[in-house]
Length: 74
Image: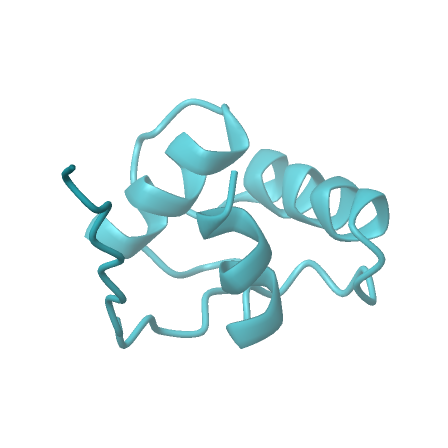
């Protein structure tokens, strides 16, 4: 039979924080389920902190490697 193929993708994701903008911010906002306007403002920062605390990550509101890793699994 057909065997499932596991594909591992390595992505270089930038650290994101309040004041940042662009495509990566839109992707992160989509993961969070907030308005994906590409502008990392107070709403995105609050949603990021909430996501972090829900997933056992230090809730600093900054999207680093650990936060991206958790976000990309959901």
